[in-house]
Image (cartoon, rainbow, N blue to C red; front, side, top):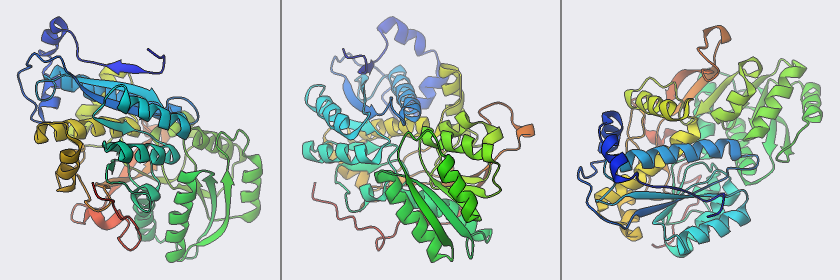
Length: 425
């Protein structure tokens, strides 16, 4: 077995008997309505997990892997699905070419029923094309590019991760309420690949449509080590806000160096993953950001997931861990309720508005015409260090967007904004 291929399988019978006494784990998986009795079947349901676990997104991808492992272990401890154990085969997709090779291997050799994971939008597009070719579902848990749900949408690709428009409209809705956009001057730093280009397009459009002034945008290569030239340009331009369209360790590197220069211009962002912010540390963080999920949410199911994750790994789940954990649960609920693994039936079930517990106040469901998961997001504020409980406690949740009485469509791209035209199944 390759060092970068890992399998997560059901425990042996003796260990399984011990684990059935762990009521908290069994109760968590029982929410799917899984069968209570484990029937003796040797054919496991195989899930292919594919995400970057090395490179500049590896830090975030590792959290996604851990979340997926926990979901599989909980399902197996509760008896599996349809009397069959769950086996997850994990691969590292460090770049788009590798992602294609690993996706083909998972489908052809390992015979997985679906693919789940990924963070890079460029790799996500490559995996989506393979999924469409093989007619096997791909659940995207970390790619933000609107194009994946738009011009490049696929019948067999579903999006648990929020799109760039969702992130932009979440923080933008709050900024509009606070009167922070009209007449304000903005400088952008943007990752120079598919995710960044797409995010700059939607975020700059939103700001300009609401009266913001774009002073400058610099496209930044991934893994940039020295941001001094960019920061000096920001100091010269004197904006009101710096809009950060970076990802992974590039966020961490920039935030630390920006703090060293002591510039007074407020930070805001296109996307926020908790891991790079944890790595930055509270001393170098400031501003309001948006998040798809946060371990500090005061929601019972969310707190319970966080407790189980901390018990297993010794630290709270990053928001990517939430994405892959929820993604596996969505797959297993779908298999249980369709009573099989046939790809076309899975697609039909998801398109007919099946609802899923997302560990949030409201359940979510996929839009039938672009396969984006409709769900709540959050505006968060960097926490006062004197009130932080530990190194992981970096945000206060300011508000949920959309609000409790608002449509979940509020932060979605409209059909006029989204050119998705799904091919036939």
